[in-house]
Image (cartoon, rainbow, N blue to C red):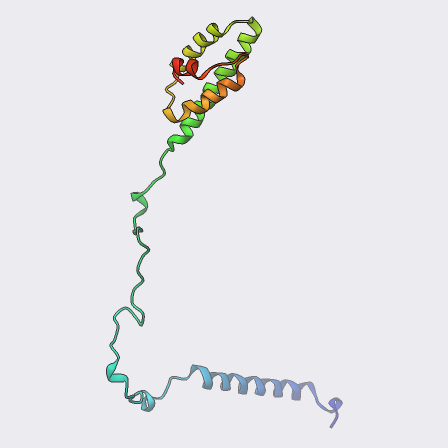
Length: 156
């Protein structure tokens, strides 16, 4: 039999029959409810020794040490003190640069610089941890050599 002997109606009829058989097979294999006769499991010798767990096979998960479940209202973001200190350092450094530039332009001496620097330090509350770095900054930018004793005398 050749393909030219088949009519379109025969082909479509066969396609519909095959599709119906396919869907019937899929329904029988996957969507049928199991029969009630085979619903009791077979008895096993170890079945009496197994405890039934309430939270499933493994139980509940244990949180990491130091963690807790909190509501969204129970936490927030704090303002870091270090950011404020970094802004403070930048302001003090800018004032020192301006003072050094003014002293170089006026050809003023070390005593004038130390007086002006004492006024700059009085304007800011500088934490103890930042005083050493500011002392190094002053030594680098001052137009003359400043000793450690002079820095300690003015508060650094």
